Every structure is written in C-alpha cells, then in structure tokens.
Length: 570
Image 1 (cartoon, helix red, strand yellow):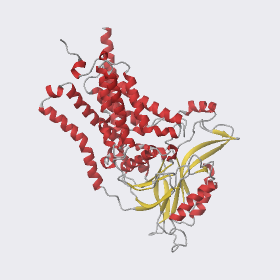
Image 2 (spheres, rainbow, N blue to C red; image 1 turned 90 degrees about the horizontal axis):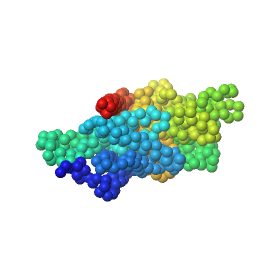
Image 3 (tube, rainbow, N blue to C red; image 1 turned 90 degrees about the vertical axis):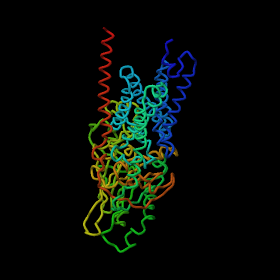
Image 4 (tube, rainbow, N blue to C red; image 1 turned 60 degrees about the horizontal axis):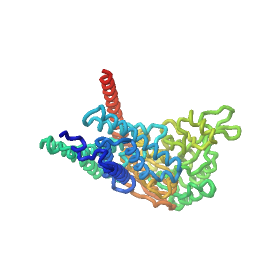
C-alpha cells in the first residue's frame, strides 16, 4: 500500500477532523508571541533566533495537509505580531495605528505568499533562501519608501541586548536580520529532517556533525565575538560636556494650555539650576571657556520662521539668555515655517494663509551667545502625521478633505549643527560638529550614518515620545538609539520632552537616563569621535547583497515558470 506524504510526516489529512486547523492556529499565535517578546520585554532578543520557526512549521502543515486559504493563516499571524509589538501607535492616531498594523502585515504576507508560490517551481532549500533574501531586501527598500514603517526590522529585536550585537558596526541592523533568518532556517531544517526520517535514515555521521556544527557556530559565534568586542572597546578621551533637558510639557496641551513664553521659562529655569557655575560672574570671567552643549526636545517651539529666524520671539529669548552663559550652545526643536509671497503656489505641498503661501518643517536649531545659528529640517518624516506621501496625488485629495494630513518638508541632504566656543588654549574660535536626528530619524540605520559621514563627532536625538502614552513605544524608541550608537560609534545625547532622556556611549550603553513623565536634567559628558566604522563607510552591504540575490532568484523563478508553461502547452 502506498504511503502518503501526510502519513510520512505524521500530519493528518484534511478529512481527519480539525486537528490540523487547531495546530495551524496554535503555531500562528506562538509565532506572534515569540516575535513580539524581543520588542516588549528587555533581554529577550534571543527569542527571535527561533521565533520564525513556528511560522515555517505552520506553512509546512498547511501545504502537506492540503488546507485551503493558506494566506489567511500567515496574514493573521503577521497581524497578531504587528498588533502585539506596535499597538501603542493607536494612542497617537487610531486610524494611523490600524493602518500601520494591517498594511505592514499585508506587505509581510505578500512576501510570504511569494515564497509559498516559489516552492512550486524552485526545489530544495532555494525557496527558503529566496524568502530570507527577499525579506531583507524588503527591509532595505522600506528605508527609502515614502510610506515607511521600519519599526519591526528583525535586527531591531536585539536593541536591548547590545552586548551580543557589537558587530553591527560592520553590518548594521540588517546584519541582525540575516542572523535571525540564518538560525531560524537551520533550526527549521533540522526539525524537518527529524520529522521526515532523513536525519536517521539518510544522513551519515559526517553530514550530521557538519549540520550541527553549522547550527552551533551560526548561533553562538556572533554573540561571543560581540562580547569580546564589547569588553575591548575603548572610547577616545575627548570629552564634551552636555546638558540634556526634559521639561516634561504635555504635547497634547502644549499649544493650547500653556503659552510659549511660559514653556521657555520652564526650560531656561532648568538651565539656570543646572549651570550655576557657568553663569557670568560666578567665576573668573574669561572669553575662552570649554564648550557645553545643551539639548532641548523636538518641536519645543512653534514660532520659528525660516525667512527671518533672528526675529522669532523664542530665538531672541534664548539668545539674550545665553549671553550670560559663554561657551554654552543650545540645541532645540521647532515647528518652523517658510513663507512665500505671490499668487503662484510655490510647491504642491504649500498651504495658503491670507494672501501668502507657507511650507512647514520639523526643525532642529542651535544657537549661542553670539546669536549665530544653524538649522536642520527633519527629512525622515512620519507618513500622514507629518508628511503627505506621493504629494502630487494625495495633496489634491487632502485639499478636498480640508487639510487633514501633515505637509512638512524635509531637506534633501544631511547637514550638521555646530557647538561654537572659544578654545581655552589658543583663544581662537572653534566648533564641535553635531549631528541631530529628529525623532523618527533615529530608526533609520543607514540614514543615521550620514551624520557621521558628514563629520559629526557626537550625535543628538531630539524627540517627543508622549504621543504614545506610557506604553512600550517610547522604550523601544530609546533602545533603537543604542543600535545607532554601535553602528556609528558615536556618543548620543537624547532629549525627550517627557522621557526617557539619556546619554548613550559608543558601545550602546545607556549610562544615564531620566524617568518617564518627570521634569529632569542630566549634566554629564560624552566623548567625541571622528572614527568611521565599516558600516558608516560602506552602508548596508547586507541589504545590497540580499537585494542582488533576491533579483537573481526572482529571475530564476520567472525562467522556471516560463518553462513550466511551455511544458503544459506541449
């Protein structure tokens, strides 16, 4: 009597009841739980190394048992994962949060669906390699897409396990994605060989030893290498004093319940209290003093007009205040605007106000006692909330809806801010080049390296994480900054309006931090560095190679599909 594939694997055929259905749903839930834990619970990143195995097992059960509508199971699994790990987005915008969950899950499901389709035409392990490189290629593409939500990049799963991913300075977090796929596929292959009897009957001792060795090496070698790198890494002793400010102003009420003047006073009082020794008259006055960088949060003020920055009320207040604090540079965020005269609309994103037009920006500015300033406009903007994707199409729709989407305009390339001071040794003017990532920009690894490439010797991150309330969102956001510190080997001063503000060293360690929803100040030191890591110099090599392999395998799939079509005709 002929033995069926289902009997070989111990799987029940469809007519044997609902046991395969229960198993499939159980595996889908297990996948969602295992893959959510690294993003929700500290030090659980290692779960991602086998968290995809239940998904692959679920697909195998569905295929071998002949179950229909397989897409429903893997799409549901991806929705559960996205919902569990990023549900907090709905606190800022319910519609946007639901869209992010279901749309991101849909893209994941399309990738998985193409993998399932490829199994009909590509044999052996090729479909699984195709799945891994296709996924990583998608993650890399996501970094440049106008509608972009790269929060659940697999390499981010280790953001709270920094001692095992110090090698991100070579690969970036997409190297972590490759590690996740490699170990998961090796474990899955081992389980499949056990279930179908190949391990016992067909594999000789040498093959078994080679496979087990590969699994152990791929699992253990990266964290062991990382621990060695972590223990041996030493920062250069080039300190810069920093003051990280957390005024703790409720973002939902800051423009309605509290005047900008009152908010300015809260911030300046924090500086006064923290820097009594820096004020003129508290020491022997000297024009030459060591620099200090004070960092205030994102969108702290809304009265900056780029056409005439010096005339803004908040800017003038800060400039006057800093005259008593030589050597101190204040970096702060602003919702800024650029105005245009004339009847013609200057761009598709511009809005009308009276007889003029204006464009909006989410900006970072830095100034000192001289009143000179640098300004940078955030370019990695949150879709719908800050920017209108594909503006030529959607701005017309948004106009018809009455202007419900954000239309911030970012700058085309990265530019630096400068902490200026008078060198105590030479008496000459000098400056420290500072890169400033505004909020969401700190999630984009390769983009973040642009600041180091441009010459930044220290990084600031300014953000306002209270939109998500007291949920895992702001803790995840903070942890991703640790990955950026490792990838670029730059110290980071992170100012979050309501918490958590922090100082992060070049190994990704959070050396000092504030609490959530409390006014706080951190006065500390960071070390400057002009070192260029491999990842900074060369970018996402892992992503580029994966994209190349994906294209090759896609072409191979197309050829196989064409040959299969010809054979059917014959």
